[in-house]
Image 1: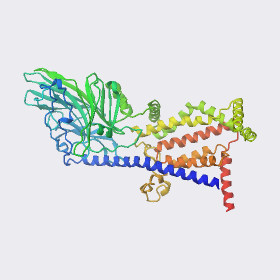
Image 2: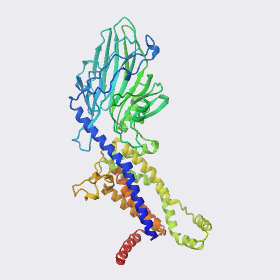
Image 3: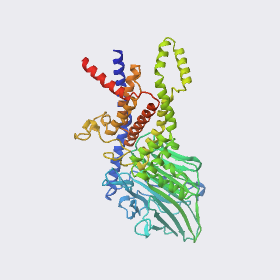
Image 4: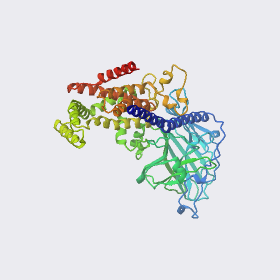
Length: 615
């Protein structure tokens, strides 16, 4: 009766843990991802329709733009820029953007980069689904844009504002080969020009110039900002940062969540001469990058009003003195695109952008995660399939740690051979646990056996598991990466489930309230569970009934637990288990130790027959 009670208690606890894991961890994560996908699709549909009503709930006025230092003003007061009204973004005249990887447009009102869609990426795995919309004009559901400009030291000076209508001076469409130049004359001796160019990927270069035809010198401060308005749906996952981000001089990497910025209002960062700042999502980012060596003052700002949140990353650079008859210039770059690892690294190296690779959230264990990614990416370049790359890299890791694992499995085989002696000692010293432990340790020392050696394969697997999980979760290279058959996205869970007979029944079990994700038990999680069960059966059944029950139910527990993890991770675990079973089997046979696998499986079926006969 006691054994049954323990069994039912363990089963109940296992089910409780699984349900709580699903309810408090996986359910919110999947819900957030579904909402984010819906938002992306709605944004795509809204942006392609230029009939939206301009969103005037949040101003883009003077308080949102960096102010010149008080010492630079004519009267000591902090200047405001020229009065601004919210720009009618989607209704403004536009300059098209057309590159191999980006399409969209630049608004002539405010000269903003505010319409960017990524040609290579779609909302779903279906290539016919809408393109990912990164930047959207004011007037759409989720305004998100980049703006550059000038702050005057003299408040009486008129400079371009957010509602200024610029003139297209040269170029018709922004392409990698044809930059565009916009111009605006303030009517008081200053002619402002803005030349925007773009490479074949996601890097824009904005060159501002001011021609001074007046008879007085002027002082202007160049600024640039990334601004995002409206509620932002994040993945809500603790191992991933989404929100404000930057690398600023001695401050190094600075990451601020949307919620924290909303509570703080403003976060002023240290003055620097190298760095960048912006806003990051899981796979996409927008950042403004001052010219290396240029002194600038950065900050993060919450500028919401009327119940509509607005988040901004901006900087103001050092003053530009423009004498009469001369032209002053300022250059900055804008990254707006996918966080592709190799591309980010190349920008860091070729453009001298300080620690730009930190735009990708490698986490605290980057020294494990990054090598794992580069190994996968290298093998992918050879085989053309990330799923196959996972299998090959798993073999490579196995070979790398083969000496350690070899010693561990040899030690386990010797431990198994010593089991009769261990049992004798337990019987001899059954009333004295201290003497029993001492006798066993002396025997292990004499036989040169490490009783903890069996933990080594597990300890080795933990960092590999974590690093692969991080790579699958944060790197865009894994997004929508197919394997074979029904696995068309290694970063998402196996889409099949046994509870609708793997698609034969037209029913979606995930729609069941509370336990829906608990019912999404796909083919690969079941393969993983079987491989783990076989690995457990390689060893003798523990004499203690409770331990035996735990070992029997552990594969079931992990099968349901990992069913909601990325398919690539489940495939890795199943493949790693299979390799471990093979390795352990060969070593045990070489050591002359009996392999318990087939006996344990046969014993299980014999026990089932006896139980049936007894009933």
